Length: 286
Length: 275
Image 1 (cartoon, chains in turn yellow, brown):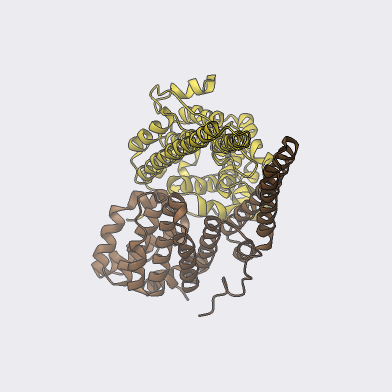
Image 2 (cartoon, rainbow over the protein chains, first blue to last red):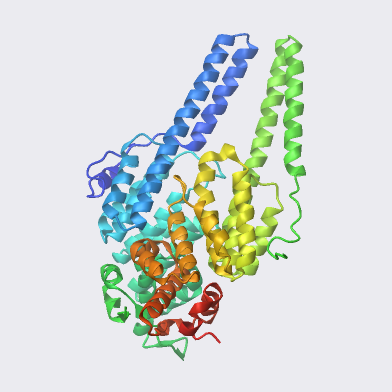
């Protein structure tokens, strides 16, 4: 794979110059297996048993190789996510880099790039996150059957929309989120939650505070169930900030923002993405 | 025991799947007869018929697969939006379809989560056990089995502990540690283990586990479980120090959440002010 956006991602501190690779997709492998089997059948009918057997063995080897590579990619990604959940961001990045730098299916590479983008977002490096998430979208552009969901692209568009909105690039963010409007409305609840947060951030950056409150109110249970750690504190801080900017009056009624409790890590996260909202945070008695 | 999440489910309508098997068999039989006709034209017609049958069968499976996946995603969206009756209705409809075992297990897992989030812990345990049963019966799906099974086991351990059935909860927890488990399973197992320790009155262990897995909980859980763990920590601190600590002011407006926590952890009621 080669393109300017992949090169940009390879230049970030999270990839350390690792060359992004990627070959084929699960749907492509399925088609190839069917074609090989069809050819084996035709050879058998044409009374060419050696050719038929060679094709059959070739198919089994192809499928076996693909399965082994897929298992290894899924394991590395799972190990990386487990490390990330335990707060070991450097270790997690190493695992994801491992997948990105080896020959895996493009879906597996997209998954690793998406996860690496999350590491960058958590590390408050929005510029690197933007480059890596764009590379994830590039890697995800591959042949797939209609019923194989493009999960990583959906999530990457939502995160990219948020990262761009946080940098004040509202129009670019809107363009990213438009992709999600074009796919099945049910497409992955988590992507919908992240997109909702990105829309709220866009509204805040455009000083449309009432719209931000409406968006965050409408999806409150979804955001509370999906967002974790500092991300959930940021969403609460966004709501509190928007209400403060509205002077505590929303739709003609007085509304006091709920207290937003934040530890030092969450405070630093809020400071990186919406520094204006830091004043809405409160410490929590231990 | 009656279970309103599972009771009254109609058995899957397998006819939809059977017509495909029938079409494939007929096409294959036709093709074999064509082979024995020893005429190039006959074999060609046989191949065309077989290819046509394959295209029709796989095409219809593809269309149906996309539709069922959409239904599962919509049910999950309803669940996360806390529209539980709608989610349960969708999932029950889905479970009445002839779906592949992994998909069935995922639908049961989502149904169990609806029951768990509604505080119906005993019913949730039953639903999770059913999901585990579906997965355990599928040795061919080794990787998928190892990924999803620990999620069901860890969730079942939690709801069993919430019901006060501590020994079965501990047994279920042992099934939550598998090499290829989705990473979320570790956090769910930790949550179940902490609740189990609290229900047994081992508060020093509760504090120790919460301190050890703090980063994991922080990165894995939404507000409901984070609040529960916060309350568990307060309860453990209260019990160990002998001084009652009360929950944050932020919980005052969360009536449903306070009730949910009190059902899972009755000892925490004085901290929550549940009426």
